[in-house]
Amino acid sequence: MAALKLAQRITQSASYEGETERINMKTSTKDQVKGSFHELKGTIKEEIGNITSDPDLKAEGKSEKKVGKVQQRIGHAKEAVANLKEQLSDLKKTG
Image 1 (cartoon, rainbow, N blue to C red):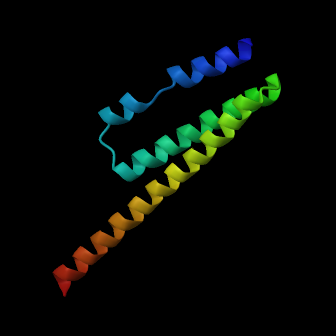
Image 2 (cartoon, rainbow, N blue to C red):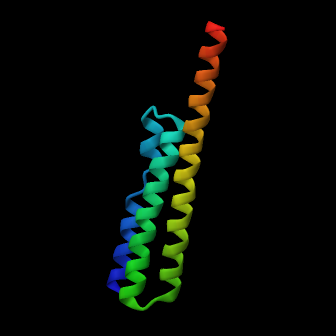
């Protein structure tokens, strides 16, 4: 039970939402960072669910890890689109 409370405290106190807003980052980078954070939180929850034999916490962790991976991929896709837009803009200037 103490491990569960510790996991909840870690995931709540490690909130990064305000931190990324103060730093001027591209949205693609923010998505990648947030995705990594969710993946880490999911791993912690999943492991604590394993240790405490809590299937709900384990499932929640797995779900959060998948959400994190999707958010990272969204960040990568945004970055790719921004790069393509930049290349297209360069082509228009030279062409």
